[in-house]
Length: 627
Image 1 (cartoon, rainbow, N blue to C red):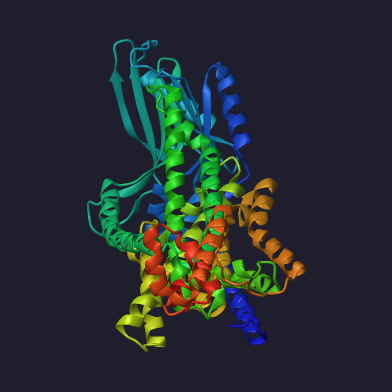
Image 2 (image 1 turned 180 degrees about the vertical axis):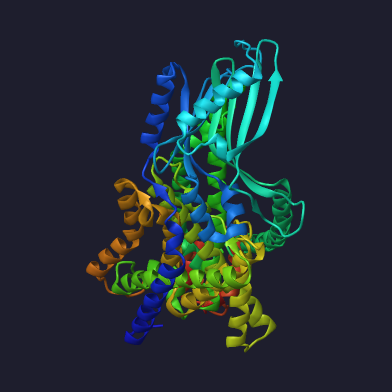
């Protein structure tokens, strides 16, 4: 469908409405994101703290990761809502987001863990792990409690023992020392999660661990979640696990049929023409997967167990990373090639619906530029739709969502690269799978089941593919668990409409922007460093830059003839076969291309060479295989 003035006007006004909806309902939730303290600053704070406590920091390896208190976020959203969560953070000086800096040695139990606020740089927690047999001066419980209390009062201005109740007060007596554990519960925090009695309440604690003259551990704010609530969460997730099992079976069926198509139709010209293009696409995906592993290297270091040999641990992770990248590459390539084949056979007239049209003509056209710009409008509308759906869900269905997107990429050395990698891989793999391939397969099936079904068939196909795509996201931390599937299904219906009307590039760009946006929104609309902000903006503007280049180049859109691309060896064989056909022209002109092909193939001729030779010879085409 041509992008005319009415189309642009419609999408423009829908985007304006969507922006207003998003700023009304979703933007306020980004206010809690504060990344003023970056990785380098947080690490330096931790290093200086340990040096001031006479720790030989240089003798330790270190790893820094970004984290958030998911349990507290989940509990407070469920009990007091997002506004209550924001108020709790402010009233109790609670840090939902923080950096964890670990100092460790190979084959040594002793290590240090420092927790640093991502907003203020304050040290929120500390843990010094030592061997159980290490000796310390033996002290009495009262002395240890006084020592812990005085330290916490000096360290944290908001800590007032008179406003707290001593909740934990016990000791573990070891061979050469005694470890004392204390926690003070803030009296003003007692948040129930259920109207039923004896189901527990959420509590706010300040903790300390004392051994001899040393404070081995302390925590400013620890939110204690009732066991009953945690058990309830696990039972809720059972539904999402069951849904995902069904979806995985369907996805495996799609992949299996895709493999079948590639094997049985390996000489299909549409698949042959696009093969090199998709190999480049998945090669980029493979490289990005490897870069993502290095980009998240701190997470690998942080997970290292010191009882393991360090170098073999890194080698194992590296090999697993390569295997994982190869698997992702294969799973992207199968639906790509089979999807092009199916689209060519079922929707050849809708040329922008696949990459074949652009490979045969050009990507550097104003039509491509327009499709990219349309993708931005589609993304904005998706954000508005999502915000509206969540507002309805939160108001009437008790929906709540954990902010997993906030810390998805913060641990990376280059968060913008992590966001780009996620957006690139998700947009290509999912749009190829659920729009190009699945809709093409649906058309092939329903054209046989219900010939002449027309729009009814398309509607059924769009609903089914959107449902599969939607509920494949059921593992996301949104409750009730079915709501994520419903929400993404609605977005899928919209994307399918755009795909069928305006082509593949628009939905690809929209999906990329949607994923990148939500993984960068905390840096853009929250509080962050200039590097985080501008690098996040840059990956969002990347498609627009490509569109600008296409607009300025403005090449003529003229499809080249769809032919096999032969190498030198094949060209030589082609000349031999053409000579043979021409020598026996009278005999072969009496036969169809199918009949000639059946005679020649058993003699070991390359199918691609046969196709070109028969086309040049002038034999009657034999259906889609000759096209």
